[in-house]
Image 1 (cartoon, rainbow, N blue to C red):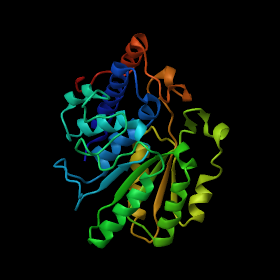
Image 2 (image 1 turned 180 degrees about the vertical axis):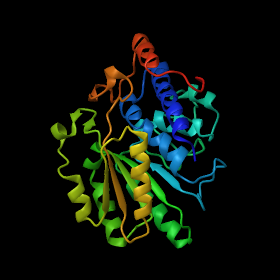
Image 3 (image 1 turned 60 degrees about the horizontal axis):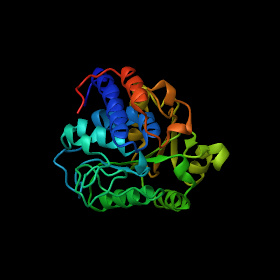
Image 4 (image 1 turned 135 degrees about the vertical axis):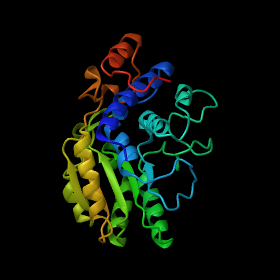
Length: 281
């Protein structure tokens, strides 16, 4: 379990990785990736129990499933910085024959990636299946998943949410990146999500809000509170209130950087706002 100081040192380095990966191929999704940097770093370095000796069966360890796969830059950076594969491999992001595809896939065999998540809306169903498998195997470890708020406009999510509540999948903690932005604008403008807390509770879930979704201590408290509530007959959801583009001032609070790469000048500005701490790839 990493200290708060270690987490705080790692986050700006992950932000630098995100910016450099997307910039070098002029393609990718920096906004949501930056907004979830604190969550990923905290989850992988302070909360989850896992081995970097990666196996697909995931027995006797916590599992994580990324449903909104377009934020792969933050996922890849966190996996590399957590020891799943060499940091230098981040330089291959989105290139031909790379294991680091634009959306995570499994046939390249990248350690840490358990499902392909290019198509939105499917991660919840997979996470539920993994959670049920753990129950059947007598494995008491937890399953974590992450979903975009705009992704919840996909209907399959709600079938899965209904199932998890009805079947008491209480070893599942699903976090929703609640930044209220998506590719074409705000979620309220594209398709309002309404009262997510009330909806999830109506489907039989326990719901926690992390109002400061880019604050490490708040994320730790939220995840530890969720862990303490597991195993009590209900699935758990965390509404993580993040800022899209967090940590790079000109990318914050706007959907404009959902899927847009920074140019050379913008990269330099973003890097200058995030001090190198562990060494770039």
